Image (cartoon, rainbow, N blue to C red; front, side):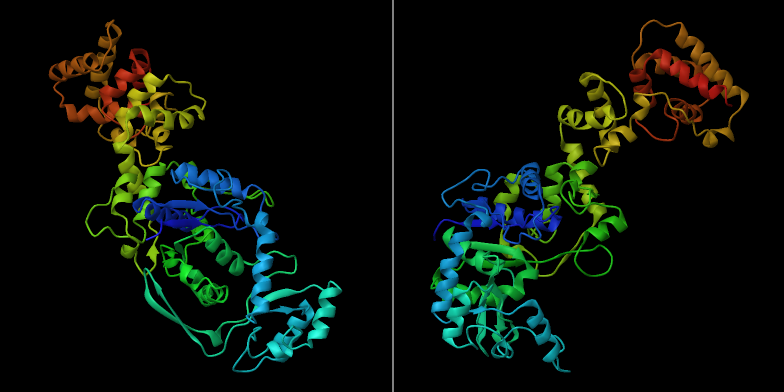
Amino acid sequence: MSKVRVRFAPSPTGGLHLGGVRTVLYNYLFARHHGGDFILRIEDTDQNRYVEGAEQYIVDCLQWCGLTPDESPQKGGPHAPYRQSERKNLYHQYAKQLIDSGHAYYAFDTTEELEKMRHDLKRPDNTNPQYDHTTRMHMRNSLSLDPHDVNELLANGIPYVVRIKMPENVTLLFTDMIRGEISFDTSLVDDKVLLKADGMPTYHLAVVVDDYLMKITHAFRGEEWLPSAPVHILLWEYLGWKHHMPQWAHLPLILKPDGNGKLSKRDGDRLGFPVFAMNWTDPRTNETTSGFREMGFLPQAFVNMLAMLGWNPGTEQELFSMDELIHKFSIERVHKGGAKFDFEKAKWFNHQYIQHTDDATLTQLAKPYIEAQGVKVSDDHLQKIVALIKDRCTLIPDFWQQGHFFFTTPQNFDISPIKEKWNDQKKAFFTSWINSLNEITEWNQEIPEQHFNKLLETNGLKKGDVLLPLRIMLVGGKYGPGVFHIADMIGKQETILRVNNVLSQL
């Protein structure tokens, strides 16, 4: 078997949907599992849809996910260039080869003529006529025109496209690595454009030529590309490369959590979660779409979550390191059916990864979110706080939400849970405790707790009677780690200040 070579070939038209990242991941895992190469190729032949900055954004997303290509526009490689716009001259010879062999033809139709055809040939049994074997001879192309007229049109520089000539009533078969044998009736497929009027190839021609020249052995892409498969199969055959055609796998869609259909950006906006890997700002509209990175996901958790969205290892295991994924991954275990996206499950993965990440790393991840609140804190101090609250954090910004009271005095105290059972006995207890704290010079977690326990005996109170009031005094609400851990971290003066703040309100 020749060396495995796979590719991810996105169009630089905007943000990278998590379905796209999953396609990258499955390509990457397959290549690494087989000791092969993973190539990034930019399919920028549609200049109308090209968006400035989108290519760099794709590169940055892959880097954040740890899915680094072996060959790419940035890295170069033996089959450069890796941008289709820079390979433009390559495709003409193959288009010409297809015309000369009778498998493609020049079409000179104007937009108006195409619209007229769609209008004039409309029938009850064909409400949307296409440019195909039933209509091509009614149009202005090198099949319907006299060869002399065709040469004259070409000589005069009249704009044209090159279309594939789809055969009638041929059944095409191919074996999909996920779906098994698939058949197509060529009569149902229109004569796709292969070369556009601007000289750029369409996806159909470019993908076949590039996969051949770059020696791609396996092509994994979304199932939405299945209808294009017959065109591509024929191109591989017509260009004489049938025996070099890569093995294909059409990946299932990632579905919206509620209802049916492909997960879209609109679903994310509607349900409050990102569908892009990283924040994407559209330079044309200045609209920013949120990403998993900025929401506070760890890349390892994001990748692990995506791997499980459509693939099953055959065991109960859900958490995998990249090395484990590479070792276990097989394309045959990818599901045929779509996988519903579950944001709660995505957050579960992230929570697991936060628990398994060392405190020093988490400190560096949490620090920008803390500093964004105008707080300056040393790494050592922050690391102690991170260790205390990490089990309560699902996303990285939670380190602020779950720990803000370590850095700033709470402005609001929810005293409603303690007001009903509050009495003079409890007030006397806290007053005595504050007085005892004022007299001590040393401060650590044990000292305020020792004083607290000692006073309980003399005041005839149980610890459970006064722990919740203490928590609300220090934190402002019913959450947070152990109260004496908090007292230790915020220091003696701040502890006394906060207790007095609440005592004055009760």
